[in-house]
Every structure is written in C-alpha cells, then in structure tokens.
Length: 538
Image (cartoon, rainbow, N blue to C red; front, side, top):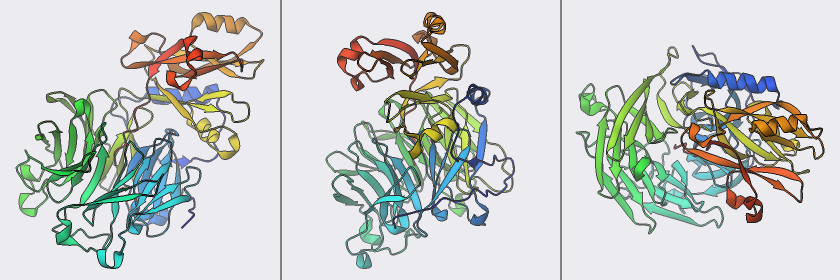
C-alpha cells in the first residue's frame, strides 16, 4: 500500500451549496487578486456560512465526511471514511481529493509539530503518514494486536499527537488506547476495564453493548491524554505517569449521556460535548438532549449545560479569547463565552438550509483564517462560519536557490509556491492579518532592484523614501496589519532586521529563531494577530 490517486472533481449538485473548484496549479499574485480576495473576506458578517460540497457523482448514495484539521500550509484537511479519501480545501474554496486504499476507512487526521500529515486507517488497524504533495502513503505504522486471529481488531478511531510527537489513538471497537512513536517505532497500549467483557471483537463496524467505546482523544497543555467513552458516561485521563483514571459525567439526569468530544478550554478546564440519551422512551424529554459539560481537573467535578434543540456533536476552543464552540448535529452552532466560573454568555448561530439532506454535523475546529470550519457527514459538506476574528493568514516562503524571502496571503499564489517545481521551501506562518479596515493599515510591497528581494513596509515615512529611491520599485498595496499595538487586543510584534552579510531584510515573530546579535538591532515592523493555534479537534 504505497500509493494513492487524485479524484476528479465531478461534484454533485446540492441545494444552496457552493461547488468548489479544483486546486490546480495556482497563479502568481496580483494586486487585483489580492483585493478581490481581501474584499470577499472583509464583507463576510459574523455568522455567515459557506457550505462546500465534497460529494462526487461516483459516490452515489454514500455520504461520510468526518474529521477536520487545519494544516500548516494554510489549507483545511478532512477525512471521508466510507469514501476511503482524504481531502483539502483552500480558503477560497478550491478542493483536492486523495484516494486511499479501498476499504481502509481513514478517520483521524493530524499534523505533527514538524508538519508531517498522519491519518488513521481504522479498518486496517494502521496509522499512516501521507505526502502533502499527492496524498501517497509514505510510512505505515501497525497498531494491530500481536495475534489478531485470537485478540480481534483494534480499530484506531480517535487520533491526536502528544507534545513528544507520539501518535495516540482510541480503539473504538476494542476498548484499548495506545500510542506509537514514529521516531523509534515503539508501541504502547492501555486496556480499559471493560475490554475483558467484550474481547475479542472481530468486527470493525460493530460496538458490543458492554463496550466502553473510546471515541475521541486530546491533550492538555501539560501533556495528559483525555478521552471520552461513548457508551459508559465517562471521560478518562492517562497522565504523564501512565496512570489511567475514569470520571463519571454528572448533571444530565441520565447515565447514558454518550460523550462524543473532549478538549481543553480556557482557564485549564476540560470541556466535553454530549450527544445525549437517545433511548426511544426518552425522546422529547430533557434527558434525550445533548449539551456540553465542563470538568475541573483540580476538584474532579462537572458543571453541565444541557441544550434544547437536538443531539450534540463536536466542540472546540474558539478563536475568540475565552470561548468554546459546540455543535448540534443538525440545526445550529453554539458559541459559549466563558470565564473561571463557567458559561458567561451563549450565542446560537442558525445554519442555512441545504435541501433534502440533514447535515448531521460531526466535527468543528479553527481554520487558519480565523473562521471556524466544520463537517456535515450526512451531506458531505465542509463548511466555514465567519467570526469577528476572521482575516487573512500570511505565509513566508524561502526560495531555496537565492534564500530570498517571499510572503503571500493569496491562496492562488501559495498553492503554486507549495508545488515541487516552485523552488520555494515549506511555508512559515507569520500572523493573521485583520479584516477591520478602521484599525488596520496596508503594507506596501516593493522590489529591491539591487538584490532582487521583495520588501514590505507599513511606515509612511519609509514608504515615501523608498518610493523616491532609485533602488526600490513600488509594486502594490498588500496585506493589512496594525501599526499601533493599542489598535486591537492580543497583538504580537513582527520584527524586521537587516542581514549585513546577505544585505537583505528578514521578518520574523520568534526572537529565538534569529541570532541574538541580529535581533539586537531589529525593530518592530508592525503588529498583528497570531495565526490561531491548530486546534482542530477530531
């Protein structure tokens, strides 16, 4: 299993849903392209939703778009389990699909700190590293039992990567959790107490009634692993000493809450999304409703927030400071503004009609553009909802031949720069520019006609001097930033230094990434929002 192929984008028509375009080869930046893209982002209002249909005609009546995660290359990645596919979307709505081996059922998806793309193949009991160029399988890690003929299947479903780079998974149908270290090949497995009652299970699709069914796993800032058991009303923790602890969810009036998603939110609390007790005799009662709960690791107590519309689904920490998001499966997205005491406020965002199919939303996460992105598995949709924090990510590329730096914020251009033939190295995300015209200023792009370098400034005096100099050629207005730190909250400085040896400018946000002597002479070129953390929890 060493390869995969690209799908043709013959997407099926769905009511009120945008048909994405192929990613293709991209095109070079132009002032018009940037202005069009920036204007389209700026005009989105809070709560605006764009639905992208990723269902092929050849998929017929099979629908199944699952996990979602933000890539370091500025694209949004997703898995389509029953289609045996991984896909990605650019921020302006162009899509590329990668075919994986038939019957492999790709589910969990994550990027490591060094930019490697990993996916779980649930029905193959494998974790694989995929090429970001063409989706081909680079390396395969088996997480199967030593004797699957007697021990059954593992079924790696939930997936996350810990601070040490180990690949963690949950065995949804086997009641085990484990990790594999791609650096050493070492593999460690943890068994839940219920495994003895359900082992062996030889069916990847069926969860036995007595099973715990661990379904989702994430890490807190310390490095503890947190997970949810779909069928036992529990969340669990594996701490740094490999101690496994289980905690009963409280506050929903039922012992069948069906927790489905877990993640760390503000103030260090753990948040859990609740699908709800869907027993026939409870339908229509408060006990059948989903919701969200907050767990305090210090006191080991829950604060519950039952909801009122339908079953709960995914959740994630928000781009807005001190916020968490929650999905109903079919109707709405909910943002909770929280503080140390719990929920402070709640905003419900209704979603547009998509015709005859129910959404059945599954996962939600931050995008690199400050929007929230989510999947609807029953309609094969990848969707984007605008937030107050939306803007444009700007990526820095280094030309491998000249070492000149090149910045881009236009998807048409940076997808071209990502191609193997471009000569540009992996992008370094600098910051998220703002879409707030009242507070932000445009950077001016110039070409240094002596070194051939592209340079930027947001300083009016420097802009005037450069425009009068024979050395610099003015190109255009570029991405927008802040020139004053008081213009917005949570800004970071973007430094600029001049490399005396190479005779070129360099921009950076991490002082530790440059020589201390160079940083000593640096100045702050502008202030900007940090690109949101890759908090796409699956």
